[in-house]
Amino acid sequence: MAVHFDNGWNSEVAVGNIEAACTKLGFDLETYVVNWNEFRDLQRSFLRASVIDIELVTDHAIFAVMHRLAKDRGVKFVLSGTNIATESVMPDAWVWPKQDWRNIRAIQKRFGTVPLMTFPHDSILTFGMMRALNLGCTYVQILNNIHYRRDLAERELSEELAWRDYGEKHHESIFTRFYQCAILPTKFGVDKRKAHLSSRIVNGELSREEALAELASPACGPDLLAEDREYVLKKLGFSSSEFDAIMAAPPRPHDDYPSLGRLLHWLRRRRDLVREARLTT
Image: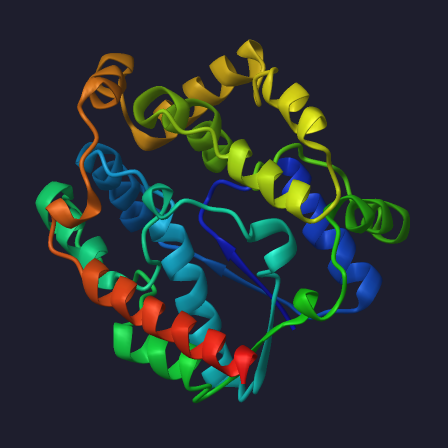
């Protein structure tokens, strides 16, 4: 069974890729469509909070939906696309722990107007039991069992499943594309391509010179950027002046608001130490 979390921002290419893959491979597709009224207000809240990881709300919900469906359907294994090859480099300052439901609730309480009645979520205890202790289902990072390369995967997907390229990593989402091309560079001084390309250099897919050449050009052209800005602002209900004020506001750390960030970072460090100890014994 393939699971898709639909947060309202799918590009046409993304929808086509999902349909083509599931049809070709004979997968049952389970699509969870989020309550748009709640999700829209939550994204507005995170933008107004001036925190960097606006995608926290989507990533948290994706895991929660998978946990819920696995439990309801009696599924014992979840195949994860997480992989060291293309995701080994990412500064901690650019993201926030995805398990931090407390941070999501706090920001929504501070800036939101719509109660989160149906938004899929998990507590830190549920995340821990499902992910660390494998209670309920086991996560299998299947791509770490092979020498995974993005370039070869793209070619095979194109040849076998009629997959269409959507550009940079995660640009299958219109919001994420605008977030990575406009919000992050302008407000936070972050170009996520530096992390994505660095991972591919480490993996032997690119040379440093090739990566620098790619960084020399913008991830989104001016026409696409203008088109995405108009679409995103209209869909989220921001005027141009309101959004410009949000972009001009200084960034704030996630833990300016109630969070479990320190605990989650501590737990991750302990987990990594245990893994390192196992590898050296």
